[in-house]
Image (cartoon, rainbow, N blue to C red):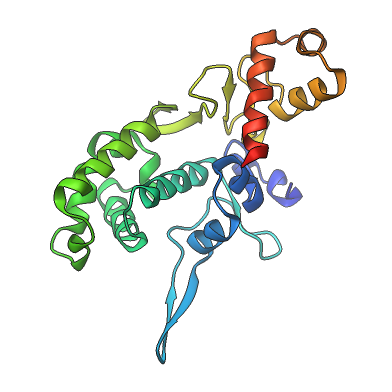
Length: 234
């Protein structure tokens, strides 16, 4: 973990993730995250075009490596979901810029306003552009509605922004909360990192024994083990 970041009181409570951390949690290739948050260049014929980052990460880079906060993590999750749904990155880039202006939020996807108004914002941002041809209007509406509904399903919203993510099937047992353990996955009611519980079960060979050692219910330990297994399989 970047020691300098931890020394800055203003950074506490934001969560802390390296690109490999985020790639593991989101099951997204690290190269994609680096491109989306670091920008990239591409050449078309004799012309080289430089694409800026989709947004500036919450945390400063360390030794030229991108480091991100919890809100960045959630925004990346939305970007990947929209891409998986068939929207073009340029369409998403345009929506982010438009939503940022409408909502006055640097990271608009992880807000309650986007949950309620996101479909309208997305469609308005694309109206009258050549990207209208990428998907017909009906399909675009379906994709946006589906992504917003499914992606917000396991997110907790407070004060109009996403505060927590419940990454294991939306269950209450496991949480990613930037206010706790620097945003690493933990047993929600107990604060023990899921990786610690999973490693302990692997060493001890017993969910019940590990539950007693950490004072965590056995069913929560099982969820932690299952969640870590999913992450390691990614």
